[in-house]
Length: 149
Figure 1 (cartoon, rainbow, N blue to C red):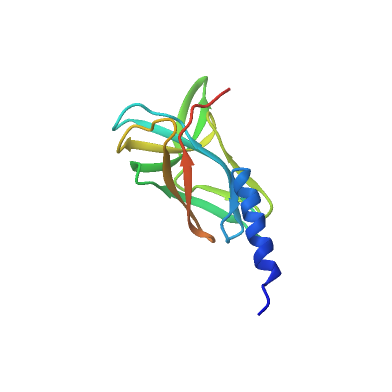
Figure 2 (figure 1 turned 60 degrees about the horizontal axis):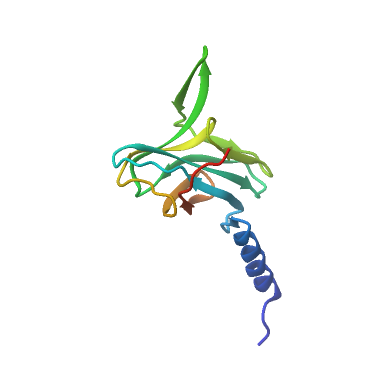
C-alpha cells in the first residue's frame, strides 16, 4: 500500500490555511478571517464579516446565509443615501468572479443577524451556513470578537 501524496499535500495545505484563519471547503471556495461582532441583547441584531475567495474557474454567487444564532439572517450592504447611512437588504446576494473575492466588513457588505436567539458574547463561536449557487451550502465557524479599528 502506498499513501497518496496528493492527500497529504491537501491536508497539509488545509492545516496551514486553518492556522491563518482560512480553509478551502473542497468546493474551491475559501473563507478567511470570519468574525461576528458582539451583541449584548437576546432578540437584538448582530453582524458577521469575512472574506470569501472563489478559487474555481466559474463565477459563483453568495445567494443567502443562515444561522441557528438568529431567527432571521440577511445579506446587507451599508449605503450612503444622501448623507444618511442605511442598511439595504441584498436578496440576490453577490457574485464572486473566478479568482475574485467578496469582502464582508463593517460599514459595507455584511451578514445581518436579526432577532438573536441569545447574546453574542466575545469568546464564543456561532455557525453560519453560506449558500452559494454552485458550491452549495458551506458551514463556517465564526468567532465572536470585538472589532479593533
